[in-house]
Image 1 (cartoon, one colour):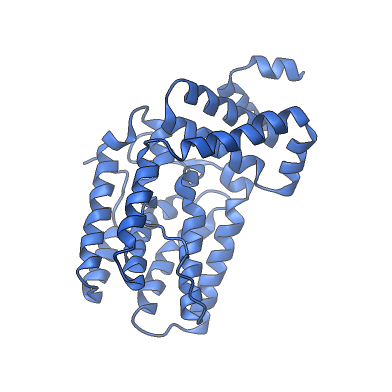
Image 2 (cartoon, rainbow, N blue to C red):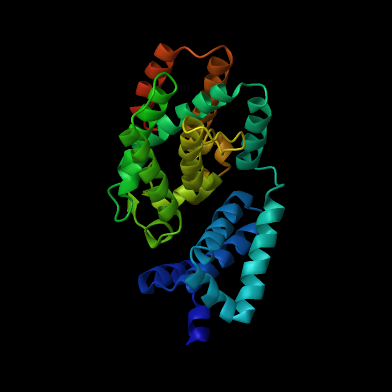
Length: 296
């Protein structure tokens, strides 16, 4: 039976594994797609598929233990997948380069400037979250807009205990979603770019956990436990997994990606010049109404 399964293409095995909820089989299908893409020099898709394999087999102790019982699977996939992802971290990919550039520029800013720079990106993810919130188990993504408003408020005035509790609940919900079947085996919604958007497209740049980390970092700052190493969400509205999965080209040449890069660096220059809270609110309102997938 396993031999018959192996004769199918990775794409066929991927669909069959999703249908049967065979998560180690799903990991294997993603791994095989990633290896093939890497051998073909398609490094963006190699990162896409290998990172998905890693996310699936790491999603829970139950899934990981099941892969570990199969020694061949564990040695061939878990170990090799990790090695390949590590190798790809040094590849000349936009997703690697933009993180390095942002980290370098962030060192020139004060902490509040970095946080506001991140908040502006989170505002652009609000419409994405609202679309994906319609999927089973993804309701928490619909709360990003309220989180943006509360974080903006918290920079200027105290927030209530109830508002702090709301942010904590969202953090917990995002963290739970990152390991849930609703994430790695979830559905898709229509998208202005053409191909449907999958909730698993938030896997790139660890977008889901970076959002959770940003909100948690703000909570720590508000409750007297700031951490300068809290994750930022600055590059995450690039959503490279979507483009690598659907576009079949160098994502740096995609108009929507170039437009998002322009917004990132425009926000940087604005934040660097000094935070004006009225302007910040205006930018956020505009971004919350923006569809980052819309052509032109």
